Each structure stands twice: as C-alpha cells, then as structure tokens.
Amino acid sequence: MDHRIVNQSTSYFKTISKDRLKGQWVKAVIAAGIYTAIVGIVDFIIELFMQDMNTGLLSVGYFIIVYGAATVGLYSYFVKVIRSEENGLGSSFEGFASFGRSFVLGFLMLLFIVLWGLLLIIPGIIASFRYALAPMILRDRPDLTPLQCIKESKRLMKGNKANLLTLDLSFIGWYLLMYLPELAFTLFAGPSLYNSPIVSIISLITIILSLWVMAYMTSSIVVFYEEAILPVPEVKVIKIEEAVGNNEQ
Image (cartoon, rainbow, N blue to C red; front, side, top):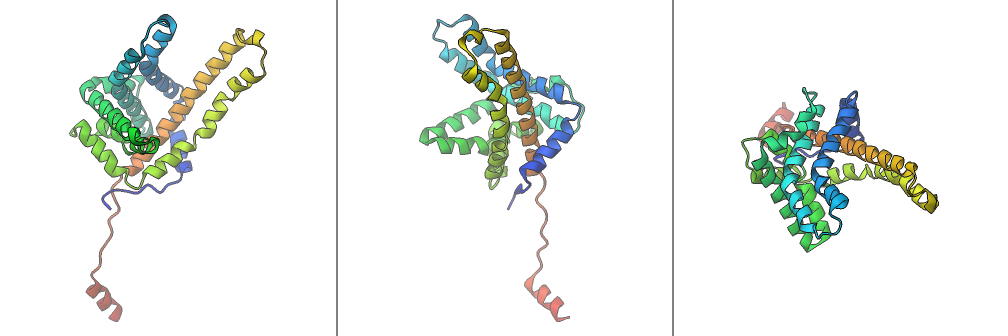
C-alpha cells in the first residue's frame, strides 16, 4: 500500500475540529459565508433583479469560473485553522491569488464528476469523493499541476472513500436540525404570518446555522486530509531464513 488508510472514527475528526475552532467560530462562520457569497452572488442578483430573464447559462457559467478559486480559498482558511497557523479571513481568497491553477482544478473536477454522473448518479457521487482532497493538495503542492493534484487525490482516496462518506453522513442530523424551525413554521403557521418579521428572523437563524455546519464540516474534512497525507508506517520485513535462525537460537 503506497498510501495511508484512514481508520479513525468520525468522532475523532470532529473532536479535533472543535478543539482547533475554539475561540475562532465567528471567523470560521464568516469564512464559510465568504465562500457562499462568492459562489452564490450571481444567483442572488438574478433572483433579486432579473427574474424575467432566462439566466441559467449565466449562473452556470459564473459558478464554473469561481468554483475552483472559491473552494481552494475555503480549504486554505480551514487548513490553517487545523494546523494552528497564523490566519485571517484573507486566506479565504488564496484561491484567487493563484486563479489560473484554481480555475483549471475546479473545471476539471466538475467536468469529471459530471461525466461520471452521466453514467449513473452513484458513479458521480463516488467521483466527488475521489477528488475531494484535490483543493487542499493544490494549496499544499504548488509543484503539481491541477491534473496531478486530482490524480494525487485519487491515489490518497483509494480505500478511504467510504470513510469520508461516513464522515459526511454524520452531519445529516445537524442539517435536519438546522431546517427544523423553518419547516415547523411552514407547517403550523397561518398564511397571515408568512410576511411577518418572524419569517426573516427564522431565515436568518437558518442561514447562520448552515454556515456554522459548513465550517464544522469543512474543518473536519481537513482533519481527514491531514490523516490521509501522513506517511505510511514502515513495516520491517524479516527474511524467513533469519526468522527461523532466530527461533532455533
């Protein structure tokens, strides 16, 4: 085996994540908000000002352009958090400092995931986990091309995709809890309350909770990455003849 198999439990990743985020939750939530704002700003503008136009291609095109840089920036911020390095919200824009590499990485990741997804949904999901570490590798390995970062992620994720899937699924409860107030209000509130200030308050709480979960989840994935890139433990190989000789003595 030329890479490390990550066997730690999900609680291990989450515990380290929470420990590193102590005292930094506000900035971490803002960093998650920066990513969300970057990738979603065009959709927001379209919904606000351009409702009568066919703007699907504009939205998709913008997402493809910024996805790589925004994602590299998001992970750059949380890599520094987990490594306890000096950090600031400016780290969230590191992907734009190397925009060419980040853009190519994001474009290739999306292209490969879509192509695999055209076969069936499951191959597309598997592909997304196969390439999950590529943004962090690109950040850590400036000597690698974007395609080499993707290949390195594929190598590191052999035998580890199920472990990362388990980590992701462990956050489902948080997402359900996050949307519970909004769902309860929709089900039980009368139509007269739909335009009341309480709707805005609930929406704001939901947004903040979603960014909190994103920060928690992203930092946990970085902990997974840190384990995956550790060197493979050396195994001392003893020749059969030497072993037999030692036993005879």
